[in-house]
Length: 289
Image (cartoon, rainbow, N blue to C red; front, side):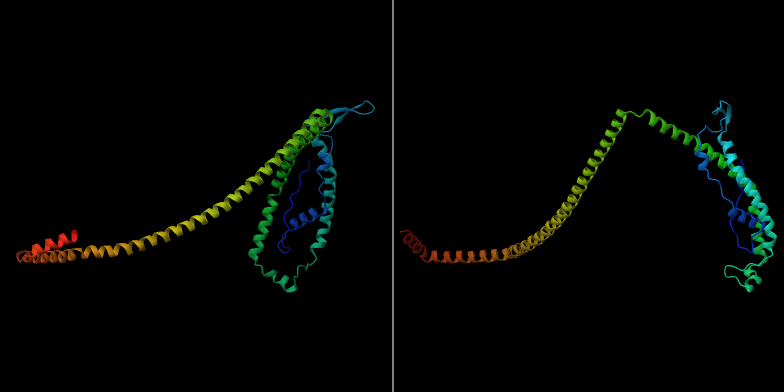
């Protein structure tokens, strides 16, 4: 299996090394063979030994494995790539002599090296050399990735094809009817679940509305309670304050009453001494009669 060549990212023309330019040109001139062409062939086990197969004449022929078919598929690609490499290498000296003006560059900017210093250019050259130094490692890693993809996709493709063959060969009417009934039951269950969710949502919205109304009613009741409490306090003050004043003035009234009673008792005693008692009795008897 031919390893894929690492393709560096295109750098500015002033800092692009000849090797990097050649790699970019190669990457834009070849086509990668489609991997689906290999997978669409007959599925075989991964890394299995070559198996013999009889042709129409009865002669046994080896059946190539996936690795051999992939090698055969990429052989033409490798030859075309090598031919293009030779052609590009022959054309490079002629192209390298040209003075390129592109991307709105002028003669002054080219003579000034785009304002780049020698340190910056040397740093870019170091980066290019670093990218070229890891090219072999990346090529080996790409080969390992291709092997991993083959190890993963080929068994999966074989399994899918086997499943399709089994379904086409062993599918019976009862199983199909049962599967259809199961699908219909799932749809009915989904419809019931959707209706229940809608009902729950409606009930939830109604509950929210009722809770808002109840909170509003509770707020109004609290306001009325506060107003009633204020009215009660005001009425109590209106009733209690006069009572307090009367209680405070009660001792004075009692003293005046006691003084009046003593005065009247003295007057009655004087009248008794002057015969007033008989007159008093007579007046009382006359009132009774």
